[in-house]
Image 1 (cartoon, rainbow, N blue to C red):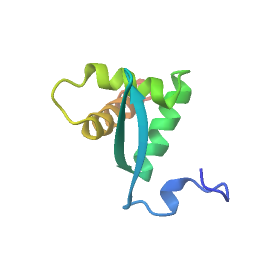
Image 2 (image 1 turned 90 degrees about the vertical axis):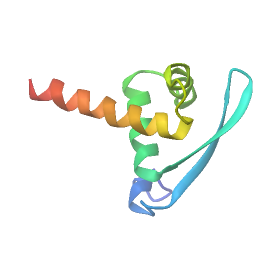
Image 3 (image 1 turned 60 degrees about the vertical axis):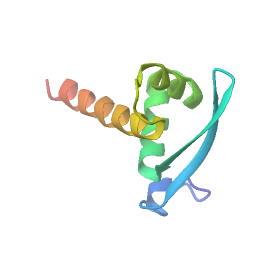
Image 4 (image 1 turned 135 degrees about the horizontal axis):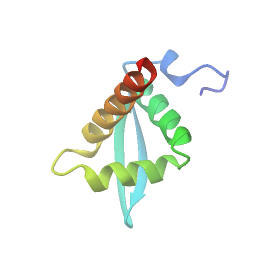
Length: 88
């Protein structure tokens, strides 16, 4: 959320935002567009975990994919599964 309570995706949806995390003691950065950060934060809350914890989980399962790409695909899959669950 932005300072005015507006989702960050409303401010600059196409401009990637870079954030840094520590995964297994290694510092890394992820660059994604605001809607992906918003969706990832929403998924972390629904999974009752932190953003860093969720990213570490995604990192552990990503194989050879880049971390930013793996996170984007994970977010897409997460919300697709939710849509199927909600539809019955």
